[in-house]
Length: 313
Image (cartoon, rainbow, N blue to C red; front, side, top):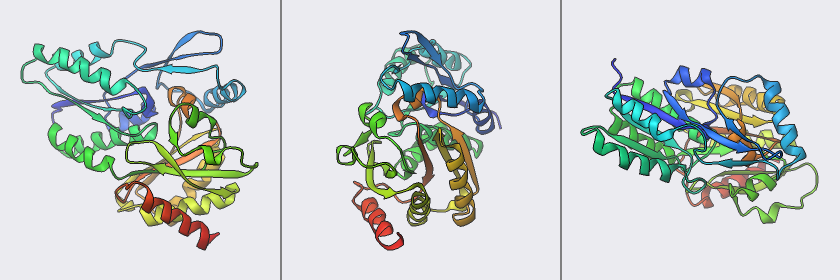
């Protein structure tokens, strides 16, 4: 089938070259990070081994205030969009939540400036209301929908529906990073907890992660993750579940095996979180991304979580 539109995402999607090629992601917008040495570096989504990611997160852990990110701070994003329009293709873009970054707003402005030059062409930009593999998962769905023959309009409309059903669940060691970077709400109540206590949360309707509760120890967090997924996932056999991690590869792999055994999705893929997302997430976490019940104001999700903790633990 001839491709009539390109699919782009941004560097916060955490999609490796292998995943982008497999699922038909045509391009991505680069990011820039600043280091403790005050150097600005391109933050790409290119191939790196596990040692690269582990080294980065150990450095981040040692100096959490020394790293910063900038939206669309590298390359020529307007030129990237132009290059696809010049090929006679429309463009579908999936971006990080507009509540967390100026990326969405900037791309909308670029599209407005470009479209008068290309009569009849379309640039459709989806605010994912998510970050990390939340962005990446929606970009992958876009690629799968295009492969199924959906038009750009049909694809965009379906992604808007799926966005409202995209969950995240997993434990995190330290809320400092996500709280200081504005990635999480109601975090204050969970600071100062003793070693071993694992806060766990899900995406809210605007893409902020909200802590639903806390679990004592990593072993219990596995059980909560599985039970929470059982109560909130829909049609697992038809979807790819992603587990992203920072310095928790062993734990992420164990969670993946449990999900394969008990949830039985079509596939489970464990991924690293790239630096442009990791600076804002921090080391010491893993989380599963999947589609299920429509996200509420999190009152329903909190009730599910509390019921699991009360009855299963």
